[in-house]
Image (cartoon, rainbow over all chains, first blue to last red):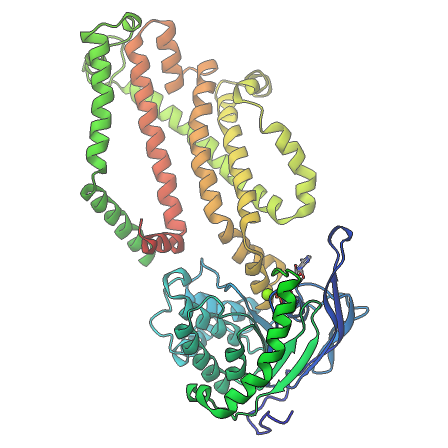
Length: 283
Length: 283
Ligand SMILES: Nc1ncnc2c1ncn2[C@@H]1O[C@H](COP(=O)(O)OP(=O)(O)O)[C@@H](O)[C@H]1O
Ligand SMILES: [Mg+2]
């Protein structure tokens, strides 16, 4: 992958290989093909942006990687280890691949600190004191000090998203799976979130599989854009974003950003129109 | 420590904002209206169907008399014995209903198999009114105490179980998925997601439960037992001591209200996160 810096800071594990994946939903016999012979290769440490119209099957693809449901055929590998494929119906959900959900899934009944400590507490490898020390430190690093004892319902939605990312990082996952985490945020909060996410990424390099339908977000964050076709979803066009990391918001006004935007826009709009005409709804 | 503090603060806050609002005055007017209607209809206008009704002044005089005509007032130990026995029956029945209903509801909501096994039976028994259980309760249980407690327990148990089950079903699937992602086992997910997630519904169930407990208690005490507020009302009716009926009723209302309030406070204490969210939402 040309745009991925090959320096020492890149992790050696966390590569995801999606091979010929097909997913057909079959509720009461009415087969809905959500993913069609989809192959994507994501090297370790890449920020891979999945762009596609609503209802095309992006969440479905993410759920198969996370292990929330099985696939119809094909294979998914994590570092050459098979996650799911023939003979292994469904990947086992686990803390090497953590999902940041579309609507946010911090536990409202636990404080932010307890939420962040949750993963390691469940694994039970470290003592409670060690875990909470680490959690406080991670929160401070992410600029979240002072909100430890608040409940998620008491803080802004932007802050909740950051807490959720920190919670995911506590388990030291190899892959983070984002399902349109910022779609409900206003554009100003969104840009703050983007810089915060990159900041966290530069400190903890992991592979990022990020679903969005916001093209600007995709180009700003990603090493690479995989533009999906309307349902059933399969890669339609791959766009390399050769703007070097670390990036900040000045990138948005650069000529290269415009060029990439123009290159991607045509395909994205075409697929969105197809989806609209087919009357797709989100699953 | 800090938990009981926030509960205290919240209670104080609620009381002071209540006093500042028009609510207490409206409440006063409401009470005043009903009491004066009672007074005028019986003692002044002497409406035709009201001739046998005990008068307001008569009831108050009897209730607060040092030497009550029918032997029951706030100065007689007998009065407190009836209250105590009713409260004890409520406590046994409510605690038993909670101790059995909450776990059963949790497992019914959690396990599809168990639900298919038990729920139809449950739904068949649930609509049977308490009064229909009276003969069976007397046949099944010896003495006069256990049948009453059993009758009081029944409806509470159904309300608690059903609401707890609905509570489990109401939990967003993303919370369990998030827990699995973070490495929680099935049992850990039950403890950390299912139980707290169902808590709001559980407490709604307990509110209903304490209400129906009083309802069934009175039904039970009217047919069986030698003490209790329901017994007072029934014997006063048979003995034509009408002012005692009213004393029994008002006392029931008072203690019904107090026990419900206790359940609400317990709920606030257990669900700080909810209390704080609601306080923020402005009520
Ligand atoms: N559990 C399911 N059962 C049946 N059909 C589903 C299910 N989940 C999603 N779908 C369908 O699959 C398609 C893709 O859904 P989804 O992956 O959620 O799309 P996206 O995330 O790209 O908006 C939609 O047509 C949706 O209706
Ligand atoms: Mg989606």
